[in-house]
Image (tube, rainbow, N blue to C red; front, side, top):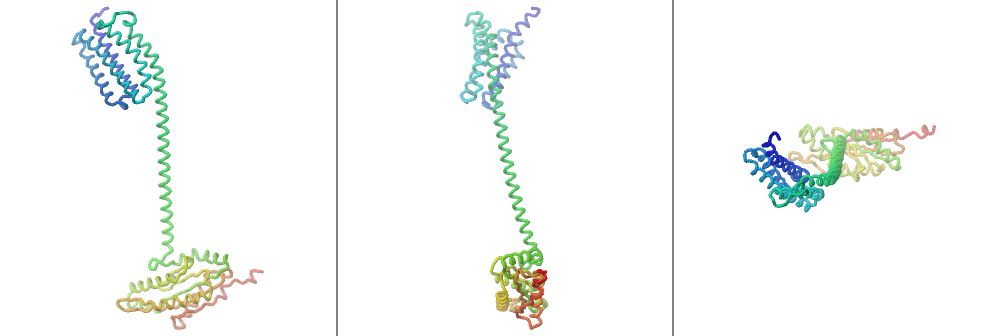
Length: 373
């Protein structure tokens, strides 16, 4: 009463604030930013216009301001209806409840606007249409918000499930990658272990292989009631080859010998070992004395018939071989059998080289009488 001018300005200003609030609420509830970006920009433009009207209303006069704001009621009503219908068509369920709630308010607002333009008579329902519509709107929006909250909870649960599924998939993928890496590492370790048991020059096994595996070989033969034979092979006059042609040529000769010896192995159980220098050992599980002797003679003759060409000159490879065989179940140790083959090898050397000699194994056989005692 004390400020009639302010009372006049308060009406269009209040309408502007109300229309702005309606636009912001509709944008938020209907999730227009994500679901309808173009319609969201239209609503943002309307809000900006209303904020501008709040600033210029005192400058343009009461009647123009009230007419613009009243027209804005129709605009926001159409915008809200359009947005709600679009989202209903998109299958967004909360939009149906939102439209039902806002229809009550919009009817009251439109009725009030039509009264302002003199298009409807001023009666209780039209004059207080906004208040009546607001009461109905709040009641219906409470239901709409309940459905919205439920949908948000469902969406949250869906996102949680999807995140859990993605996490489980990532864990499974990482586990698979880890298992593959562990498998590769295991294979690499196996190759490294295998490499550590090999002679770098010839590719034959080294003495470490004998230390780690030969007892298991004897045990398998003993369990199968099989013999075990050893061939100790040495190149004759190899030092002369090194002195005359050099160690590189000597290495080539060793590789040639190793290739020939490898070709004489009949199965995977038979093993070629570089014992040291120009000496090689062939382990023959399951091969008896007579067969081992024949194999040794064949190896000696094959090496003699396989000259190595060095600096355009043919180098004859002669070998001395010591043979030792025993029943694996009666054998004291493989080391004893190796000593027997080594002794036979040196007998071949002293006997003129390029020959095969059989070693004595009497000292390698277990004393059965002592076992019985």
